[in-house]
Length: 439
Ligand code: ADP
Image 1 (cartoon, rainbow, N blue to C red):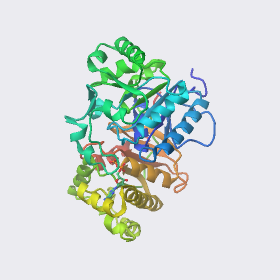
Image 2 (cartoon, rainbow, N blue to C red):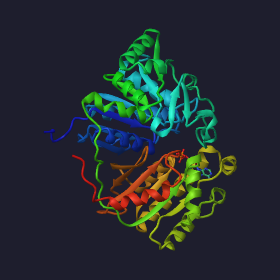
Image 3 (tube, protein in one colour):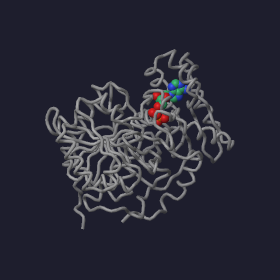
Image 4 (cartoon, protein in one colour):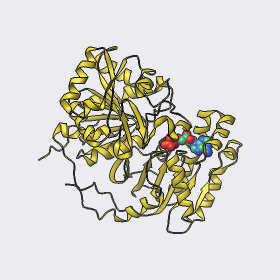
């Protein structure tokens, strides 16, 4: 028999909202009952979960703010009694030389071990999603990170695939590498490499991983380490450290109803292909012209007026998603941060209007965009349901905009999901409420 309230073992701090659901999804699939909170909860009430994921929106804010928010999350998780802390960032290591991965890692290590003390890993690998690390270099599919679409990212362009170099530019601690040949020899070899690196004064080890066996070996080696920093992939090897196992059943969600919509603010290559595919299927779409928005047009009202005319049963799409050239034109006019914020806030207001208008199944594409939407919807906790695509689960949330009715949300990080993601995701929701409940 389980105690009435589980003791949380793993406390996670995610630097964006889609990343948080991606991590929660992996933990649920490996048998950890997981609650995701939006921001740091105001109350210290003990949550009934094996793992808690605190979703921040700290990826692209000034480093000092990201540090302060992450430390606040750490203190809240410590009050929950967690045994291990997991700082989760993007599987494409989205960051700039100013941060925020390095400064947050430093601050968490300082808080847990004392100034410039302690040791942790950094590993964005998620092989199931084609993110692998070899000889310290991050690959997206068959391409180096620096050759992938990430070199064009509006907020965090990644032009160097060498993670030792990228991380060393952001952290005060010395950065080292645990290479694949060591990882392939298993958990003991990885533990031995950690000890050797620490003797050499290394505080952060980039760890190679090219498949799930690597993730399980690394996971076992991380047992008892106070801080882990990683993408969501490393999570699959951790639940076993507490004797928890993968489940065959997925957590059930309440039945889904209402209208279906997609709001997309991601300009990543995968999202561009998904938007193009959605339109090719002849499904209704409304393009939010960011330049017109910047010039002061009330496109939020226009988009919502258009949405009201969509009476079909199928999903419809509102998107700001654009080619890099078009994004640059807006950024040159407003500045990078202001352009991002303008589009995010417009899409968030549109999402609110859509829910007010009866949408109850909503996909949001884009990490930053999802953060803005979830905040605008007033969501503070998410129940994690079945996986749509690697890294993207359906979730059920409560919102004051539709009291007493479940709102189903899927938050899709830019590069996740197959080409037909935006239409196929809604086929799945028809089975909600009739799925077996996980034991
Ligand atoms: P991803 O998960 O693909 O990185 P994000 O939502 O995190 O997506 O980031 C995309 C950023 O680009 C957001 O800040 C969004 O507001 C901005 N953006 C989206 N469309 C445009 C556009 N047409 N012009 C300028 N910026 C845009």
